[in-house]
Image 1 (cartoon, rainbow, N blue to C red):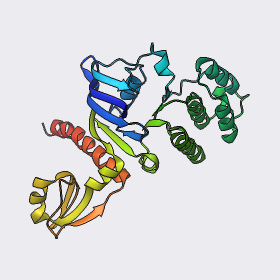
Image 2 (image 1 turned 135 degrees about the horizontal axis):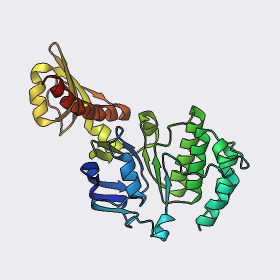
Image 3 (image 1 turned 90 degrees about the horizontal axis):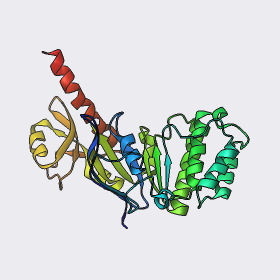
Image 4 (image 1 turned 135 degrees about the vertical axis):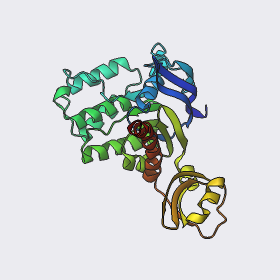
Length: 298
């Protein structure tokens, strides 16, 4: 098994609305993959299908070489899923949540759970509903990690965390990746966090996969070019222009290179992962604005 997640033309439709479509992915085992997209892009829908909570309308998917299903109990033991709402019993104490986790999961590592809660200063006697939002997120992560999963699915985990909680979350996550070879798929709007930990990136836009690839390769092939506007058309014929602006006689563009740029008048600049993500997401914003502009000018 080379890939942790494989999808082919995967799609989910509600009536006439496609929440996700044409989704083809091959996410490597052992990777930490960032899943990025604007609200409504299909991130949560994809996560829920990977966790076996939703059945696809079209296409196929395999997770850890298995078709996801809530009935596939052996497979469920191999994944951890932290949803946006955390799915915690708010009237339980933290200790009772650990007991429930131990009873439901044959591979439960209670030592890991107890040590993690001590490290995070989360008292086991406290009711879950009395914990802060950030503490509840950390508790959900501890419960998922204590299953000793092979794959960890995290849907927008950073939403209500303070900076210290985020730091501890990231440490625990990377320790699981390094020490226990956990594959991680993490959706987030926080591009600076993804830049620190991700080695693979998927960008969803308008329910479709727009970008998927290794971070190092994406950064090597995407560059910011600055050069004469008179040569821009020639540049665009060879390389894929993602975003461009023109001022006076000078052009500036973020491009996906197709080979080398032979014109010495063009200057190259590297771009960060955060910049790359923002450039692609801005394309969707521009596309969504076009119908609105057309409506205004009718």
